[in-house]
Image 1 (spheres, rainbow, N blue to C red):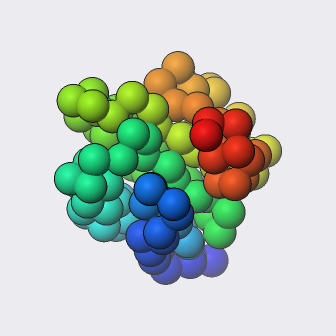
Image 2 (image 1 turned 90 degrees about the horizontal axis):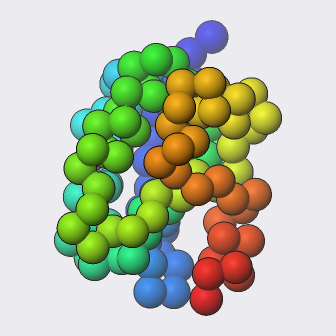
Length: 115
């Protein structure tokens, strides 16, 4: 059963959060890249993705994030994945994406630790 992908840019003090919802497949790529660009143009110190409403990611979804990691730099020092399910944490570790991103239990816990 497929869940349509949606994305929302959420204001957090001095930061935009990219809140993801639905299945992360190739169809999510364009929206995620656009949101990533918005965060970069805003000058945020990190790109924070909220996965609290995501239950599924396939290899094409993972590839989207590897392409963003390649584009990182230029002032963005961290990419943060918040609220991943245990299964998604395992996938991120197995594919090696964990070497490039920080994991946080929640968006708020990441911000509390990085004031």
